[in-house]
Every structure is written in structure tokens, then in C-alpha cells.
Image 1 (tube, rainbow, N blue to C red):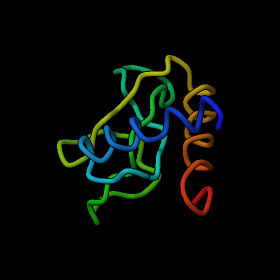
Image 2 (tube, one colour; image 1 turned 45 degrees about the horizontal axis):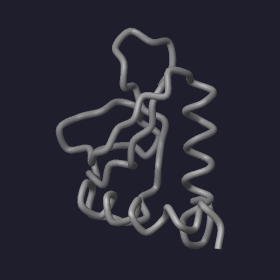
Image 3 (cartoon, rainbow, N blue to C red; image 1 turned 180 degrees about the horizontal axis):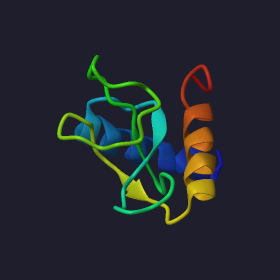
Length: 90
């Protein structure tokens, strides 16, 4: 078992508590005001009025949102986390 395998159970438990899904789909998100692009990540909002690619965060959006301080890093983290979901990237 790898260190990554060792960390998954606790992370999945935390995500289930925070957003109700142990394997959420992730998106790049605007976690800091005034940035040119989304510099953070957050789970995709399940609200049917939200577009999947909308980077804005609203009261209906599930937590956690995580600041990555870089659009490139945010996009990379989204791809990594979505690839780690059962069935791979969405």
C-alpha cells in the first residue's frame, strides 16, 4: 500500500462530512476576489441552476474550497482529484 492509499480513507471521511460525497467531482473556483482566473478548487455545485464550469462560489456550493494561489495549480489539482475518483475523470 502506498502513502496515497493510506491517506484516502481519512480524506474521504472528511469530504463526506463537508460536502456529503466522499468522491466529489472538483472544479477550479474563484476563492480569492480580484483574480484574473480561478486560483482555487471546490466541489462541483449540485444546484441545477449552476453551470458545471462556473468558477464562482455561492452559498449553495459545497465545501471545502481550497486556495491554490495559482490558476495553473488549481487546474492541475482538479485534474488529479477527478482522476482519483472511481471511474476516473468526469
